[in-house]
Structure formats: structure tokens, C-alpha cells
Length: 292
Image (cartoon, rainbow, N blue to C red; front, side, top):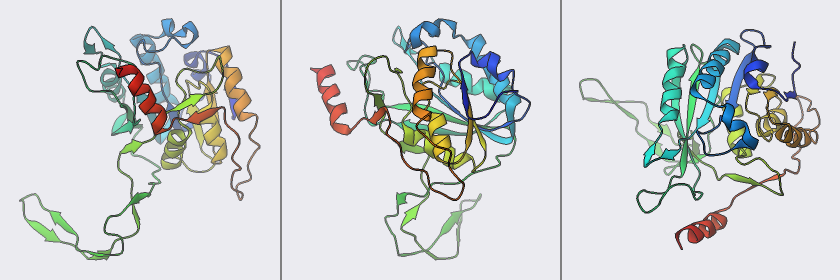
């Protein structure tokens, strides 16, 4: 039996086979994107057949009503996007998952991937929200400023025959529920020998808050630099993770070792991170370098 709040340095497919059925409330992860990163040479072990086996294990270990957040993008090869992300989403449906939502992560900038002479700059990735049966937990984040805050709103609803039905008027609150396009800048790691594609901490945290509750178990089968584990602990969730690279395991364990166990009645204390947010000026500098 594997322990909670621990990162196992092993292939996630072999690791998940050691987990019991329906033991995970939420998975937040990002698999390798085609051939866009080498991941210390381990990209050679990645294939669609390997993905299929991992997807089946994710379905087995996910609780009824649980969620898998699968964040993925596509490579462009010989002038065409691979469409791997769509193939994966359809396969998840084929084995029993519901495609609950197709969310977009708008990164607000781009790296030097692809040819800007023939296409617009790629600035987003897909976030497929997959559920096993009817979704159990949804804690919507309400941080979208309402344009008509404090005003009386006359709600209407369009019926199937095209007619309009008036609803009960209400006073608009200051903030409304966020849309399914999230604007979050990527993050970079400081120093050498760092993970090539770290999660933004806010991205991991917002999904953890949205689709799980305190005390739940959060899985990341591609743990990388440990962002999912860190944000799970800081938000009073348990985690379990797998990472095949010993180098990345070391980075991840160093990050989470700085976090003390958090009593349920206390707020987490932020810790210094080895990852920093990329600001807009940095992205503009990169844009100028690429297009110069």
C-alpha cells in the first residue's frame, strides 16, 4: 500500500497499479506534449499506447464523481498540428469518462515555438475536465468583476420556441463566477537543471479549490517539479505523485519539504518557491527577440 503525501520516483503506470480502486478524488496533471520537451530523455517512453494504459488506470483509481484535469497541447509537425489532445480527450470518453468541460488556459504570451510567418502566436492550452459519473464537487471561483455591480438586473431566459421568459430581478454582486477561460501567466524556474515546463502555482491551486474539498486525495502521475503536491498541501488536501525522473523528484521533494503539515483550522503560510511568475514585460521581451 502506498503512502499519502509522498512522491514516488517511478513510472506512473506501474505506480498507479499499486493503488486500490476508486481511491482518488481529483487528478491534476499535464502529460508530455508530443515531442515538445525531452524530459531528461524520458520522452522516448511516451506513446499513444502508453497514454491509453495510463488513461485506463486513471479511470480505475478515480472515485465515482471524481475529476481528472488533463492539461495538454499539440506539437506542429510538417505544418500541421498533431491533434493529439483531441485524440486523448475522445479516448477518455471511450473508456467511460465524461468530458465535463473543455477549458482554456490563456498564457498571455508565447514561447518561440512554431512559425509566426504563417500562423498566429499560440498562447493557450487545453484543460480537459473529465468526470467519472456525475460530478461530486464543484466550488466555483467567483473573482470576475461584474460590470453592473450593485445594479438591479432583470433576468430573462430564452425558451425552446424562441420566446423570452422574464425571471426574478436581482441585485448584481461585485464579483461573478469565473468563465472557463483562465488567464494565468506561465512560470519559470530559477537556476540550472530545472524542470522545462513547470505548472503555474495558481493554475494548480485554482483547479484543486474548484474540484476538491479539504481532506481529499489529489493525484499527479506526472509530478514534475511538485507544484500539484505543494498546492494540495497548502490547501489542506492530501496528495500522491509519481515522477520517473530522479532529478525532478529531487526538485519536487525539496519544494514540499519546506511546507509544514497544516491544521485544518489554520490558514497555510506561503513558502518561498523556486518558481517565479513570468510577467508581461518578460513576454514582450521574448516577442521582440523572436520577431526581430
